[in-house]
Image (cartoon, rainbow, N blue to C red; front, side):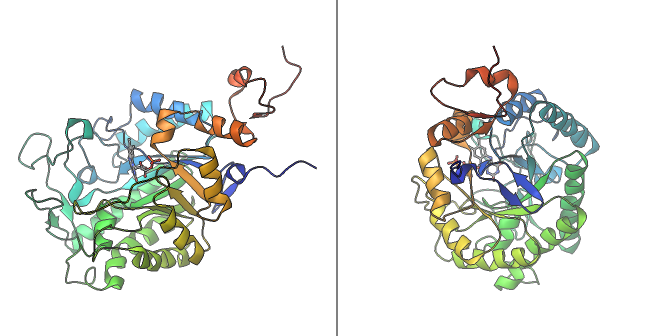
Length: 373
Ligand SMILES: Cc1cc2nc3c(=O)[nH]c(=O)nc-3n(C[C@H](O)[C@H](O)[C@H](O)COP(=O)(O)O)c2cc1C
Protein backbone atom coordinates (compact mmCIF):
# COMPACT_ATOMS: atom_id res chain seq x y z
CA UNK A 1 0.00 0.00 0.00
CA UNK A 2 1.23 3.51 -0.79
CA UNK A 3 2.45 5.52 2.20
CA UNK A 4 0.29 8.44 3.30
CA UNK A 5 1.93 11.67 2.11
CA UNK A 6 3.65 13.85 4.72
CA UNK A 7 1.25 16.14 6.59
CA UNK A 8 2.59 19.20 4.74
CA UNK A 9 1.51 17.71 1.43
CA UNK A 10 -2.01 16.64 2.35
CA UNK A 11 -4.90 18.71 0.96
CA UNK A 12 -6.71 21.19 3.19
CA UNK A 13 -10.11 22.79 2.77
CA UNK A 14 -10.64 26.46 3.54
CA UNK A 15 -14.41 26.38 3.28
CA UNK A 16 -15.16 25.39 -0.32
CA UNK A 17 -11.57 26.03 -1.48
CA UNK A 18 -9.30 22.97 -1.55
CA UNK A 19 -5.58 23.60 -1.23
CA UNK A 20 -3.49 20.82 -2.80
CA UNK A 21 -0.98 21.10 0.06
CA UNK A 22 -0.52 23.10 3.25
CA UNK A 23 2.17 25.53 2.16
CA UNK A 24 0.70 29.04 2.02
CA UNK A 25 2.54 31.96 0.46
CA UNK A 26 1.98 34.75 2.98
CA UNK A 27 0.84 38.15 1.74
CA UNK A 28 3.82 40.35 0.91
CA UNK A 29 3.51 44.05 0.07
CA UNK A 30 5.52 44.97 -3.01
CA UNK A 31 5.08 48.78 -2.90
CA UNK A 32 5.23 48.66 -6.68
CA UNK A 33 1.76 49.70 -7.83
CA UNK A 34 0.75 52.91 -9.59
CA UNK A 35 -2.33 54.58 -8.10
CA UNK A 36 -3.21 51.16 -6.64
CA UNK A 37 -2.91 49.34 -9.96
CA UNK A 38 -0.73 46.28 -10.44
CA UNK A 39 1.79 46.31 -13.28
CA UNK A 40 4.64 44.41 -14.86
CA UNK A 41 6.43 43.84 -11.53
CA UNK A 42 3.37 41.97 -10.23
CA UNK A 43 3.26 39.88 -13.39
CA UNK A 44 6.85 38.74 -12.89
CA UNK A 45 6.79 38.46 -9.09
CA UNK A 46 3.46 36.66 -8.80
CA UNK A 47 4.24 34.61 -11.91
CA UNK A 48 7.33 33.29 -10.18
CA UNK A 49 5.43 32.45 -6.98
CA UNK A 50 2.59 30.85 -8.94
CA UNK A 51 5.08 28.23 -10.20
CA UNK A 52 6.30 27.46 -6.67
CA UNK A 53 4.11 24.41 -6.08
CA UNK A 54 2.65 26.00 -2.92
CA UNK A 55 -0.93 25.20 -1.96
CA UNK A 56 -2.12 28.83 -1.87
CA UNK A 57 -0.83 32.20 -3.02
CA UNK A 58 -2.18 35.12 -0.99
CA UNK A 59 -1.69 38.42 -2.83
CA UNK A 60 -0.21 41.29 -0.84
CA UNK A 61 -2.15 43.65 1.43
CA UNK A 62 -4.50 45.31 -1.04
CA UNK A 63 -6.07 48.56 0.01
CA UNK A 64 -9.84 48.96 -0.04
CA UNK A 65 -9.51 52.74 -0.43
CA UNK A 66 -6.79 55.16 -1.51
CA UNK A 67 -6.51 56.48 2.05
CA UNK A 68 -6.21 52.90 3.31
CA UNK A 69 -2.89 52.36 1.51
CA UNK A 70 0.23 52.09 3.65
CA UNK A 71 2.33 53.83 0.98
CA UNK A 72 1.50 55.69 -2.24
CA UNK A 73 2.82 52.59 -4.08
CA UNK A 74 0.55 50.03 -2.37
CA UNK A 75 -1.71 47.77 -4.38
CA UNK A 76 -5.44 48.57 -4.24
CA UNK A 77 -8.83 47.33 -5.37
CA UNK A 78 -10.70 50.59 -4.99
CA UNK A 79 -11.13 51.67 -8.62
CA UNK A 80 -12.16 50.23 -11.96
CA UNK A 81 -8.58 50.74 -13.15
CA UNK A 82 -7.25 48.73 -10.18
CA UNK A 83 -9.73 45.96 -10.92
CA UNK A 84 -8.85 45.82 -14.64
CA UNK A 85 -5.11 45.77 -13.90
CA UNK A 86 -5.41 42.97 -11.36
CA UNK A 87 -7.75 41.03 -13.64
CA UNK A 88 -4.96 41.04 -16.23
CA UNK A 89 -2.50 39.64 -13.69
CA UNK A 90 -4.94 36.92 -12.61
CA UNK A 91 -5.38 35.92 -16.27
CA UNK A 92 -1.61 35.53 -16.65
CA UNK A 93 -1.32 33.50 -13.44
CA UNK A 94 -4.25 31.28 -14.44
CA UNK A 95 -2.68 30.55 -17.81
CA UNK A 96 0.54 29.44 -16.11
CA UNK A 97 -0.58 27.62 -12.97
CA UNK A 98 -3.57 26.07 -11.20
CA UNK A 99 -2.39 27.42 -7.80
CA UNK A 100 -5.32 28.70 -5.70
CA UNK A 101 -5.25 32.50 -5.50
CA UNK A 102 -6.49 34.67 -2.65
CA UNK A 103 -6.05 38.34 -1.79
CA UNK A 104 -5.51 40.10 1.50
CA UNK A 105 -7.85 43.07 1.79
CA UNK A 106 -6.55 45.80 4.02
CA UNK A 107 -6.91 49.30 5.37
CA UNK A 108 -3.82 50.78 6.98
CA UNK A 109 -5.66 53.14 9.36
CA UNK A 110 -3.18 55.32 11.24
CA UNK A 111 -0.21 53.55 9.59
CA UNK A 112 -1.24 54.96 6.18
CA UNK A 113 0.64 57.70 4.32
CA UNK A 114 4.09 56.18 4.87
CA UNK A 115 7.19 55.70 2.77
CA UNK A 116 8.13 52.31 1.36
CA UNK A 117 10.51 50.45 3.69
CA UNK A 118 13.46 50.96 1.35
CA UNK A 119 12.84 54.73 1.54
CA UNK A 120 12.90 54.60 5.35
CA UNK A 121 9.27 53.71 6.12
CA UNK A 122 8.63 57.06 7.84
CA UNK A 123 5.22 58.72 7.93
CA UNK A 124 4.66 61.15 5.04
CA UNK A 125 3.15 64.30 6.56
CA UNK A 126 -0.27 65.00 5.08
CA UNK A 127 0.70 68.45 3.80
CA UNK A 128 3.76 67.19 1.92
CA UNK A 129 3.81 65.67 -1.59
CA UNK A 130 2.48 62.12 -1.64
CA UNK A 131 0.97 62.36 1.84
CA UNK A 132 -2.64 62.32 3.02
CA UNK A 133 -4.69 62.47 6.23
CA UNK A 134 -4.89 59.03 7.83
CA UNK A 135 -8.04 57.82 9.60
CA UNK A 136 -8.27 55.47 12.56
CA UNK A 137 -10.46 54.46 15.53
CA UNK A 138 -8.96 57.24 17.67
CA UNK A 139 -6.87 60.34 17.02
CA UNK A 140 -3.73 58.68 18.41
CA UNK A 141 -0.56 58.54 16.31
CA UNK A 142 1.26 55.23 15.89
CA UNK A 143 4.64 56.63 16.91
CA UNK A 144 5.76 59.57 19.03
CA UNK A 145 6.05 62.73 17.00
CA UNK A 146 3.86 61.46 14.18
CA UNK A 147 0.80 63.32 12.92
CA UNK A 148 -2.37 62.05 14.63
CA UNK A 149 -5.01 60.44 12.38
CA UNK A 150 -8.61 61.61 12.17
CA UNK A 151 -10.94 59.53 14.35
CA UNK A 152 -13.58 57.87 12.15
CA UNK A 153 -17.14 59.04 12.81
CA UNK A 154 -20.28 57.00 12.05
CA UNK A 155 -20.25 58.02 8.37
CA UNK A 156 -16.58 57.15 8.14
CA UNK A 157 -17.17 53.68 9.60
CA UNK A 158 -19.95 53.04 7.09
CA UNK A 159 -17.72 54.26 4.26
CA UNK A 160 -14.81 51.99 5.27
CA UNK A 161 -17.09 48.97 5.68
CA UNK A 162 -18.64 49.62 2.26
CA UNK A 163 -15.15 49.92 0.74
CA UNK A 164 -14.25 46.45 2.07
CA UNK A 165 -17.44 45.06 0.51
CA UNK A 166 -16.85 46.68 -2.89
CA UNK A 167 -13.22 45.49 -2.97
CA UNK A 168 -14.31 41.96 -2.01
CA UNK A 169 -16.82 41.92 -4.87
CA UNK A 170 -14.12 43.12 -7.26
CA UNK A 171 -11.80 40.34 -6.04
CA UNK A 172 -14.43 37.69 -6.60
CA UNK A 173 -15.36 39.11 -10.01
CA UNK A 174 -11.80 38.83 -11.34
CA UNK A 175 -11.48 35.21 -10.28
CA UNK A 176 -9.70 35.36 -6.95
CA UNK A 177 -10.73 32.37 -4.88
CA UNK A 178 -10.45 33.55 -1.29
CA UNK A 179 -10.32 36.72 0.80
CA UNK A 180 -8.10 37.24 3.80
CA UNK A 181 -9.13 40.24 5.89
CA UNK A 182 -6.10 41.95 7.39
CA UNK A 183 -6.80 42.38 11.09
CA UNK A 184 -3.13 42.09 12.09
CA UNK A 185 0.11 44.10 12.20
CA UNK A 186 -1.40 47.27 13.62
CA UNK A 187 -3.54 48.17 10.62
CA UNK A 188 -7.08 49.52 10.85
CA UNK A 189 -9.03 46.43 11.99
CA UNK A 190 -6.31 45.58 14.53
CA UNK A 191 -6.41 49.22 15.68
CA UNK A 192 -10.07 48.71 16.60
CA UNK A 193 -9.29 45.48 18.49
CA UNK A 194 -6.36 46.70 20.57
CA UNK A 195 -6.94 48.85 23.65
CA UNK A 196 -3.60 50.52 22.85
CA UNK A 197 -4.98 52.15 19.69
CA UNK A 198 -8.74 52.23 20.37
CA UNK A 199 -9.76 54.82 22.96
CA UNK A 200 -13.28 55.39 21.65
CA UNK A 201 -16.12 56.01 24.07
CA UNK A 202 -18.94 54.96 21.70
CA UNK A 203 -20.20 51.45 20.84
CA UNK A 204 -16.91 50.69 19.03
CA UNK A 205 -14.50 51.22 21.93
CA UNK A 206 -14.00 50.44 25.60
CA UNK A 207 -15.20 46.91 26.42
CA UNK A 208 -13.91 43.90 24.49
CA UNK A 209 -17.36 43.40 22.92
CA UNK A 210 -17.29 46.99 21.70
CA UNK A 211 -13.76 46.70 20.29
CA UNK A 212 -14.76 43.56 18.37
CA UNK A 213 -17.83 45.26 16.91
CA UNK A 214 -16.37 47.02 13.86
CA UNK A 215 -14.03 44.18 12.73
CA UNK A 216 -16.93 41.71 13.08
CA UNK A 217 -19.28 44.03 11.17
CA UNK A 218 -16.72 44.22 8.34
CA UNK A 219 -16.36 40.45 8.37
CA UNK A 220 -20.14 39.94 8.25
CA UNK A 221 -20.59 42.44 5.43
CA UNK A 222 -17.80 40.95 3.31
CA UNK A 223 -18.92 37.38 3.97
CA UNK A 224 -22.47 38.26 2.92
CA UNK A 225 -21.23 39.93 -0.28
CA UNK A 226 -19.25 37.04 -1.80
CA UNK A 227 -19.45 33.28 -2.34
CA UNK A 228 -15.69 32.68 -2.01
CA UNK A 229 -14.30 31.83 1.45
CA UNK A 230 -13.37 34.69 3.77
CA UNK A 231 -10.85 34.34 6.57
CA UNK A 232 -8.94 36.66 8.87
CA UNK A 233 -5.31 37.35 9.71
CA UNK A 234 -4.84 38.35 13.33
CA UNK A 235 -2.05 39.53 15.53
CA UNK A 236 -2.54 37.18 18.48
CA UNK A 237 -0.46 39.42 20.73
CA UNK A 238 0.60 43.06 20.76
CA UNK A 239 3.66 42.00 22.78
CA UNK A 240 2.96 44.98 25.07
CA UNK A 241 1.63 44.72 28.64
CA UNK A 242 -2.02 45.75 28.71
CA UNK A 243 -2.42 45.19 24.97
CA UNK A 244 -4.37 42.76 22.80
CA UNK A 245 -3.37 39.21 23.71
CA UNK A 246 -4.02 35.49 23.22
CA UNK A 247 -7.19 35.49 25.36
CA UNK A 248 -8.81 38.40 23.52
CA UNK A 249 -7.73 36.88 20.19
CA UNK A 250 -9.56 33.70 21.13
CA UNK A 251 -12.75 35.66 21.86
CA UNK A 252 -12.47 37.33 18.44
CA UNK A 253 -11.70 34.00 16.74
CA UNK A 254 -14.67 32.26 18.35
CA UNK A 255 -16.97 35.04 17.17
CA UNK A 256 -15.50 34.77 13.66
CA UNK A 257 -15.85 31.00 13.66
CA UNK A 258 -19.51 31.27 14.64
CA UNK A 259 -20.00 33.59 11.65
CA UNK A 260 -18.54 31.16 9.13
CA UNK A 261 -14.93 32.30 8.96
CA UNK A 262 -12.96 29.85 6.79
CA UNK A 263 -9.65 30.01 8.71
CA UNK A 264 -7.56 31.99 11.17
CA UNK A 265 -4.09 33.15 10.12
CA UNK A 266 -2.07 33.73 13.27
CA UNK A 267 0.60 36.42 13.23
CA UNK A 268 1.48 38.96 15.93
CA UNK A 269 2.60 42.49 16.71
CA UNK A 270 2.56 45.73 14.76
CA UNK A 271 0.30 48.01 16.77
CA UNK A 272 2.89 49.62 19.02
CA UNK A 273 6.54 50.68 18.72
CA UNK A 274 6.85 49.47 22.37
CA UNK A 275 6.44 45.84 21.31
CA UNK A 276 9.01 43.25 22.40
CA UNK A 277 8.72 40.38 19.91
CA UNK A 278 10.43 37.12 20.99
CA UNK A 279 11.87 36.44 17.53
CA UNK A 280 13.16 32.95 16.79
CA UNK A 281 12.32 29.91 14.67
CA UNK A 282 8.56 29.33 14.65
CA UNK A 283 8.12 32.08 17.26
CA UNK A 284 4.39 32.55 16.61
CA UNK A 285 3.52 28.85 16.57
CA UNK A 286 2.75 28.69 20.33
CA UNK A 287 0.05 31.33 19.72
CA UNK A 288 -1.33 29.32 16.79
CA UNK A 289 -1.25 26.11 18.82
CA UNK A 290 -3.24 27.59 21.73
CA UNK A 291 -5.88 28.95 19.33
CA UNK A 292 -6.07 25.73 17.32
CA UNK A 293 -6.74 23.76 20.51
CA UNK A 294 -9.88 25.85 21.11
CA UNK A 295 -11.17 26.18 17.52
CA UNK A 296 -12.53 23.94 14.79
CA UNK A 297 -11.72 26.18 11.80
CA UNK A 298 -8.29 25.65 10.22
CA UNK A 299 -5.43 27.62 11.73
CA UNK A 300 -2.56 28.89 9.57
CA UNK A 301 0.75 29.36 11.39
CA UNK A 302 3.47 31.76 10.22
CA UNK A 303 6.75 33.31 11.32
CA UNK A 304 10.29 32.03 10.70
CA UNK A 305 9.17 28.68 9.41
CA UNK A 306 12.02 27.97 7.05
CA UNK A 307 12.85 24.25 7.07
CA UNK A 308 10.82 21.39 5.57
CA UNK A 309 11.13 19.23 8.70
CA UNK A 310 10.07 22.20 10.86
CA UNK A 311 7.02 22.85 8.67
CA UNK A 312 6.08 19.17 8.67
CA UNK A 313 6.42 18.99 12.48
CA UNK A 314 4.30 22.13 12.97
CA UNK A 315 1.38 20.38 11.27
CA UNK A 316 2.04 16.83 12.47
CA UNK A 317 2.37 18.01 16.11
CA UNK A 318 -0.83 20.07 15.99
CA UNK A 319 0.53 23.61 16.10
CA UNK A 320 -1.42 24.55 12.98
CA UNK A 321 -3.20 23.13 9.93
CA UNK A 322 -1.11 24.96 7.32
CA UNK A 323 2.13 26.94 7.38
CA UNK A 324 2.52 30.30 5.72
CA UNK A 325 5.88 31.63 4.71
CA UNK A 326 7.11 34.94 3.39
CA UNK A 327 10.87 35.55 3.47
CA UNK A 328 11.95 31.94 2.93
CA UNK A 329 9.85 31.61 -0.21
CA UNK A 330 11.02 34.96 -1.60
CA UNK A 331 14.57 33.68 -1.11
CA UNK A 332 13.78 30.32 -2.68
CA UNK A 333 10.59 30.42 -4.77
CA UNK A 334 10.90 26.66 -5.37
CA UNK A 335 10.86 25.98 -1.62
CA UNK A 336 7.82 23.68 -1.95
CA UNK A 337 9.66 21.57 -4.57
CA UNK A 338 12.67 21.25 -2.27
CA UNK A 339 10.41 20.44 0.70
CA UNK A 340 8.64 17.76 -1.34
CA UNK A 341 12.01 16.27 -2.32
CA UNK A 342 13.20 16.32 1.30
CA UNK A 343 10.00 14.82 2.72
CA UNK A 344 9.31 12.29 -0.05
CA UNK A 345 6.18 13.97 -1.41
CA UNK A 346 4.87 15.11 -4.77
CA UNK A 347 4.34 18.71 -5.80
CA UNK A 348 2.58 20.26 -8.78
CA UNK A 349 4.96 21.73 -11.37
CA UNK A 350 4.41 22.85 -14.96
CA UNK A 351 5.21 20.20 -17.59
CA UNK A 352 7.88 22.32 -19.35
CA UNK A 353 9.91 22.13 -16.11
CA UNK A 354 9.51 18.40 -15.42
CA UNK A 355 12.92 17.49 -16.86
CA UNK A 356 14.65 19.27 -13.98
CA UNK A 357 13.64 16.72 -11.32
CA UNK A 358 16.85 15.23 -9.91
CA UNK A 359 17.28 11.57 -10.84
CA UNK A 360 17.57 10.45 -7.23
CA UNK A 361 14.25 12.06 -6.25
CA UNK A 362 11.57 9.65 -7.42
CA UNK A 363 8.17 10.94 -8.58
CA UNK A 364 8.73 14.52 -7.42
CA UNK A 365 6.28 16.16 -9.79
CA UNK A 366 2.66 15.07 -9.77
CA UNK A 367 1.41 14.29 -13.29
CA UNK A 368 4.89 13.42 -14.62
CA UNK A 369 4.75 10.50 -17.05
CA UNK A 370 7.71 8.26 -17.68
CA UNK A 371 9.01 6.94 -20.98
CA UNK A 372 9.33 10.45 -22.39
CA UNK A 373 12.57 11.31 -24.14
C1 LIG B 1 8.43 41.71 1.83
C2 LIG B 1 7.38 41.46 2.88
C3 LIG B 1 6.13 42.03 2.73
C4 LIG B 1 5.11 41.76 3.66
N1 LIG B 1 3.84 42.24 3.44
C5 LIG B 1 2.82 41.81 4.21
C6 LIG B 1 1.49 42.06 3.85
O1 LIG B 1 1.19 42.61 2.77
N2 LIG B 1 0.50 41.63 4.68
C7 LIG B 1 0.79 40.94 5.83
O2 LIG B 1 -0.14 40.58 6.56
N3 LIG B 1 2.05 40.66 6.17
C8 LIG B 1 3.07 41.03 5.37
N4 LIG B 1 4.35 40.67 5.67
C9 LIG B 1 4.57 39.75 6.80
C10 LIG B 1 4.60 38.30 6.28
O3 LIG B 1 3.36 37.95 5.68
C11 LIG B 1 4.92 37.30 7.42
O4 LIG B 1 3.88 37.30 8.35
C12 LIG B 1 6.22 37.62 8.13
O5 LIG B 1 7.25 38.00 7.22
C13 LIG B 1 6.71 36.43 8.95
O6 LIG B 1 6.87 35.28 8.12
P1 LIG B 1 8.32 34.82 7.55
O7 LIG B 1 9.20 34.60 8.75
O8 LIG B 1 8.03 33.54 6.80
O9 LIG B 1 8.86 35.89 6.68
C14 LIG B 1 5.39 40.95 4.78
C15 LIG B 1 6.67 40.42 4.95
C16 LIG B 1 7.66 40.64 4.01
C17 LIG B 1 9.00 40.01 4.20
